[in-house]
Every structure is written in structure tokens, then in C-alpha cells.
Image (cartoon, rainbow, N blue to C red; front, side, top):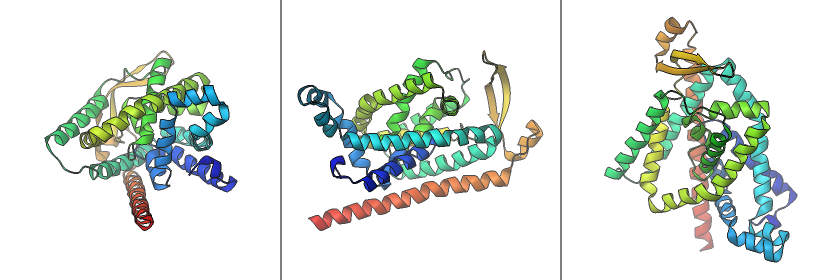
Length: 324
């Protein structure tokens, strides 16, 4: 639907869809792209992003701002991203508080989300040939290596923040992979949640600039990969998700901790432990049953979104057949 034909009520609905996408991308495992697909704006979103190109700049130069705005579907993009930003800004504080006060429960919820997402994306594979198996193992091994590497990559240097934004925003075009998962994988999730909660303007502006570049450049590359090498690409993404379960495992024993230049504790090494051993090793209650309950809730949320997405896809196919 063109932005010019939308009513005020429809713009409010579009803002709400953006808000839902932002809420999905705050937590690892739920994708804003999935929300866009379910709510029926996925294709328009991709088309609008692709419209921001050199041809659009030529229109801006020759025909003016109004023609350029129409060419890139500007009202659609502005309204949608306003909803996304408003959602992230309001929910990041809650996540930050949760990670500080109830880390086991928050990571348990994330674990359930990601575990269900592994199943969801795995089911997108048409078959398991040698190249798919290689992709699965490659993605899983990379994620597992990151899980146990010292967090040297964790930094709020602006160039790192810029690249993180460029990578994370690409998840918007991949239903099933969230931007928060990308940040989690590269060790930037806690940093960005804290930056949003503290309204760290330099970091946030740098991150948004990275997002803009990622949308314009990497999104096209990812689209090309999915068009040319769809099955191997999905296999690598599935492997990433599978390996990342080690990153979000709620019960970890810190083996080596140092204090960085900002007075913050940084865990250099850890090991995964079972809930039954966690209290003996750390003196902290494992909250086992609450954690399992939140894992189940997280998984059910993803499966519910998958169900709604399948219904939307069937409805779209049926309407197309009726028009034919």
C-alpha cells in the first residue's frame, strides 16, 4: 500500500506494527522481521529499503524533495521506524533492570526464545545435503567459539558500535533472526541496552548511523545471498542460533574476573554448570522451576508467532488465487 493512500488511522496502526517490531528486536530470539511478515508489511518494507538508492538521489536532485519522498515511500519508513525507536527506548530500561536484578530468569526466557527459533529456522531448510551440514556445523562452531572466547571484543568504542549497528539491523530482513541475537553473538548486547537506558547520545547516534549503512549495503548483500544460496545461508544461520544457546545458558560459574578501566567487572572465563550444582558453586539460588517456566513461555511465544505467520502466508496465497 502506498503511503499516500493511507489514512491517519492506518498510520497509527503502522506505528503500532513498528512498536511491535522494536519490542521483538529488544530480546534475542524474536525477530522484528517475523513481526513484519506476520503483520503484512514485510514486502513493502523490503521494497522501501531498496528504493533508497542512487536513482532516488537523482530524483531528489531533479524533481525535488516531494518526489524523492514518494519514491522511497518516506512516510511509511518514517512512521514504522518511529514506532521501532519508541519501543526500543521504552523497553530497554526494563531489560536492563531485569539483567541486573534477575539475570537467571531473563537469560532463561532468552534461552527458550532462541531454542524455539532454532526449530523454526531449521524447518525452513528444504533438505540436508552436504553443503547444509557444513553450514550448520560452521555456524554452530563459530557461535560456540564466541561463547568461550574471552570477551575482548566487548567494547563501546564508536567504530565497534557503528559496525554492530550495521550488522544488527540486517536481522530486520531475516524472519527468525533478531538484531539482539546478532548483538548478543558479538558481545554488544549488554553495552547497547545500557547505552539506551542511560541515553548515551554519542553511542546511540553512532549505532543508528551504522544501522542506516547496514540497511543500505549489507541488506542488499544478505538478500543476494538468500536469492543465490538460500539453503546454505539458512543452514549457517541455524547453526549460529544453535551454538548461541551456550551464550545464553542461565547458569554459569565465573572462573576469572577482572575490573576494567571503568570499574566494571568483566568475566574473562567461565564454565557452564547444571542448576543443581549452581548454588554450591556460587551461593546463589538457581531458581530452577521459575527458569524452566520462562523457557517454556519463550518457546511458546516463538511457536505462536510461527503459527500466526503460517496463517498469514496461507491467507495471502488464498487472496492471490482469488484474484487470478
